[in-house]
Length: 236
Image (cartoon, rainbow, N blue to C red; front, side, top):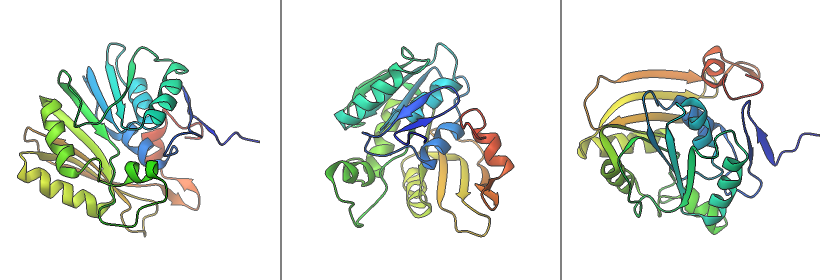
């Protein structure tokens, strides 16, 4: 029987039984989609089990360094264990810290699967509430502190539900950002958009827009999704 407490990728595994949020499609999408070409310093905000940080470690050059932060010390312990068991224990640094508190040299890329529930029902348990609600990281704070921590040519990449993504783009324009990449994700072609991947930049670039569908038919993944995740999923 497969051990569901461990999520196995091609080059690393994630033990996520004790993590606040388990490995899911959102994190894998973000880790695979974020542009990291020529990035030497990357920040993962709200790292949880460390899955996104390790995906980026796999995708980047040996001299790239990834800082991964989370406000949960318990999650940081989980992430640290996963990093320690990975092929890149020196490439990723885990730190219990909020984005608002972080002081650092500029980053080339900041990625975040941020909290997104605004004025909605809160799930039971304080840890899941912090992980999924914007009380600890508002969209304003995400944009303000990302701008503070990014290099002039740096990029902020996030994944959000469609409504929250629209709000973030609107707020970003008012704060001097430009949306340079956008991907609408849905599980099936006939389904509504379930998530939006966004890349924001402080420098103007023409917007590149795309769509991605998970299932082509039945439980068969689409060719585009397989191509995106092929380096990670065992079944891709």
